[in-house]
Length: 166
Image (cartoon, rainbow, N blue to C red; front, top):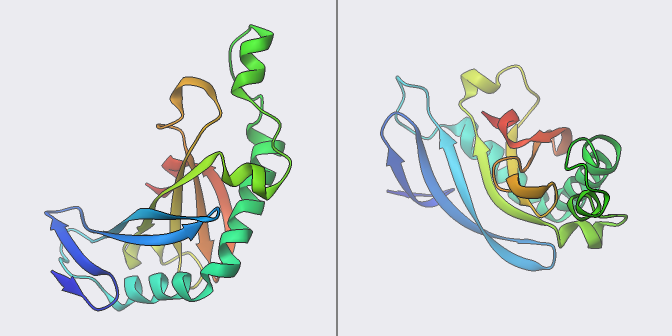
């Protein structure tokens, strides 16, 4: 199906519409999967979904820096060194020093944008959505325990593991 806001999307029965968008992040264009979640009784993309995505795209140049700053703070204040191997050298390889946005964006990879249904997100601010990243730190589970950010009203309001989005 061709959607005016999301472009070409496919519906996965009982789950979501899935599309792709190229976004500039970390100085390079990255293909991002867009998940447009639907309630079980609804099989259409709503204006709620469109508004959230259009607000993100409209403010992307500013928002991407807010995202990087929030993830950098999260990494250094909460995640770095929170678990890992007993061996000191291996532990250091799991948790590198990351002190700037430039260093951070080399270690995270834009993966997907999740726009939940309005019913799920009604307690959030305006135009809420999640942006998920894979990451290069934290040892062997870099794919499973990537990083997610919640964007509301053009601001990062939550940072955590990817599962905050589901």
